[in-house]
Length: 77
Image 1 (tube, rainbow, N blue to C red):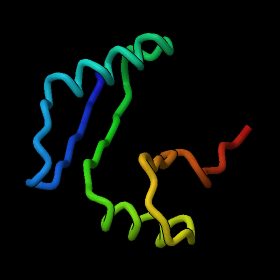
Image 2 (cartoon, helix red, strand yellow):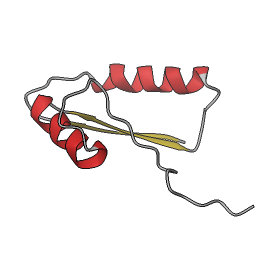
Image 3 (tube, rainbow, N blue to C red):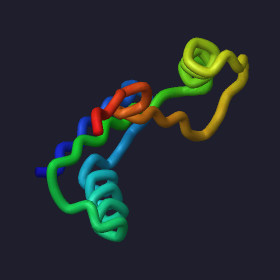
């Protein structure tokens, strides 16, 4: 199952159907067709700058900020 969670600040209109279609298309091209969750937040410059400062230590805006769900996870072998 592909689960897509989408948050958008109210002043930014988004077409959820288009975004979902694009995400599914990208995942499909990468060979990922099930058991995945994607969370997307559409925010303004102030919020993205705050997130960059908090998580990356950079006081600046960027177009995209991404996080890995497995970062820092130790996988036993």
